[in-house]
Amino acid sequence: MTDLEAFLSGRIWLREFMPFPKGQVDEGINCGDITVVQGITADRTCARCLESSPQHIHSFSCAKCEGICFYCRHCIQMGRISSCTELVTWASPSHTPQQSHSFSWNGRLTPLQLQASEKVSESVKNRKSHLVYAVCGAGKTELLFRTIHEALQSGQSVCLAAPRVDVVLELAPRLQAVFPDTVVHTLYRSAPAQTGRASIVIATTHQLYRFQNTFDLMIVDEADAFPYSFDAALERAVLKAKTPEAPIVYVSATPSRKLLKEVSDRSEIFERYHGHPLPVPVFSSLWGYRQSLKKKRIPVKLAKWVKQKIGKGEPFLVFMPNIEMIDGAIGLFQELDSRIEAVHSRDSLRKEKVMGLRNGRCTGLLTSTILERGITIPNLQVAVVGAEDSVFEASALIQIAGRAGRSAEHPAGDVTFFHDGITREMDKAKNMISNYNRRKSY
Image (cartoon, rainbow, N blue to C red; front, side):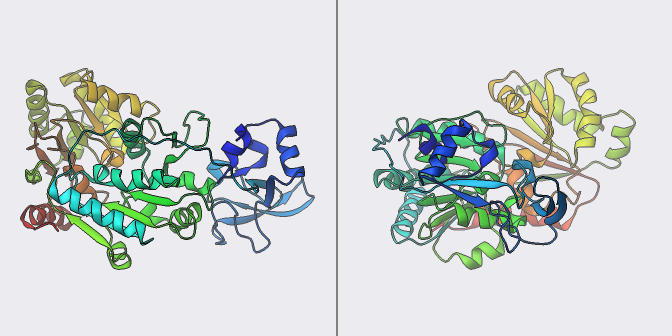
């Protein structure tokens, strides 16, 4: 298998941005190995993201073709697609090299995990989609190992997709450690270049725009998360990226009603792998906290909470409703401890800062909802400032609470919702967590 074939097999890529010499690509086109596809089809559909809505497909006067062209605004951040741009795909049969896929995991599944793992495996063998409905900290990733290994042993390609880059970054080293001899690619915006033909691809759902008819097993982790749950184009990307007969395994702690209705094969786990209950949030009033922060004062209750965690040497996350509040408050928190950092979606160093919290270099993080998922740190404590804000829906609050108490050594973390008035979403989140702790799993 040549490097060009390894790169392009299963992908659909902008011809002008191919990371190979133009002559090599042209030669592949001339000999029929590579197919050229119009960027915007005749019916005004984007060939990459399959968007066709007039809201996203716009016309413009094109100097290149001296006429009116159409371009796709929906996936423009991945390189502009227009009527006169070309996408390329590998047309010839792909020569997948033989690979050995060792399985290196010394852990042991709980009876509930084992039962769920067997159900997932059975569904996949029958080419049926499956929903793993399991609470935060139930060990959802571990129960997928068997199914992934079975697919690899059968020579199949596997994709594990997630809406958030932080989840992808958390999953990648874990999967590579379990399958040390397998070529694993991790794809997200600004990811480093990776070579060879991957048997496992771990990617943000946006990256699936660049694949078609590729994966024999598709796993969608955090299937309820934004933006996947709000963007039909991302759902189409998942369907386009897999082979027509490939099943989808959806994984979620808070699945939508739509997902619960659509996927009949299901396994449910309502307790954590270590057997301890989920931490139930405590509501704590923080009247006028916005005004206090604007006046450059940390409310007394919040400052006390932070000082307590620092004093005990417990890592912590303080969630805030928006980036402006985080940026305005970080200086105040650093007066309590200079090792506190702030992280949000616009922060290019967020990966490094999360690692700093993990290794103890950082005592705590002020953060937005980007860290509501995909972060597992022992003995982590959690607070939400402004839990009444509309950005904190019940599902988000449940995920945030799920960051605490995840390790067997520290199963009872502190989850405090600081608020300026209790909302229905807060009550819903607390009640659902309490219900999970009472329910039987099967």
